[in-house]
Length: 78
Image (cartoon, rainbow, N blue to C red; front, top):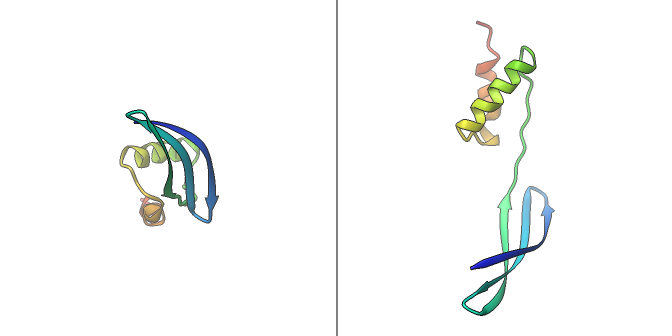
């Protein structure tokens, strides 16, 4: 199956992607729905600490829902 994205739109924290596809000589249309969420928080220290933490979050596939708890623990005084 070959997909061709036609366009996308966001409604709240949901993104809709519209596409056409072809498979075995026939064509069709499709809509994909993805939930998007954003979370932010301050990291004590400087840029280096923030970059290191962001890379760790990426490697471990951390979701926005968990960021505040992680930052609470990360920012505790040693």
